[in-house]
Length: 258
Image 1 (cartoon, rainbow, N blue to C red):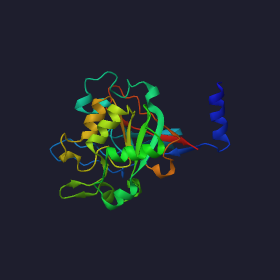
Image 2 (image 1 turned 180 degrees about the vertical axis):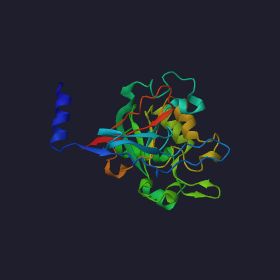
Image 3 (image 1 turned 60 degrees about the vertical axis):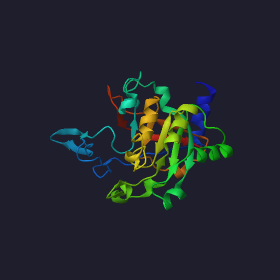
Image 4 (image 1 turned 90 degrees about the vertical axis):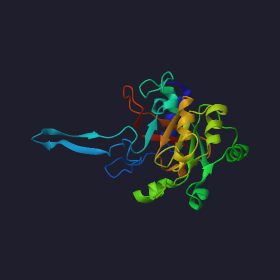
């Protein structure tokens, strides 16, 4: 075993490194992204019992389940959006697994989101963060801390009004900067999707999806516990299910942090 891997195991064992779960529970109560009625909406998570140490299976307990690819804490692959439909290795089964692991850059806009539910992360805010913490490296996961996951009431979490959902996100220019000039792995958010709630009104609509996936980048949605991570110094592992041709997948996202 390499010295690096041996040190990793030792520091996990002695508590110098911690494993933080960035994943929200997946259940029939998991909030769903609401689309207008003319579009197919993702089905809610459903689970049913197959046996529970009984006549259906005397020595085992197991369940069946069904859900959409983009339910709960989930991974968005490039093929999820029309801009990424013709890229190579664009579905979850074809993405090289080394791309599921990268350093975390956590940008905290929770105070801004508490005042303005429609707050957008700007390129200037990125540059301010970099002045303090260093340039965002290529191959990083950029995680947007909003504390939105602390909203446990599904209605407050989706925050839908007469004109649609109101949740924070990234300005179009910010997504372009991260995808093109910083070459990140992707972005992760605490909201139900990687675009702001009002992004359907932007030009193009849902610009983070359009720019990120068109650049071969990924998305992580419905994260939590970002308040337990430092701005830099953590490593994120986000590995989706290997669904053949899949546009995304629920997944268990973890971070290893001092």
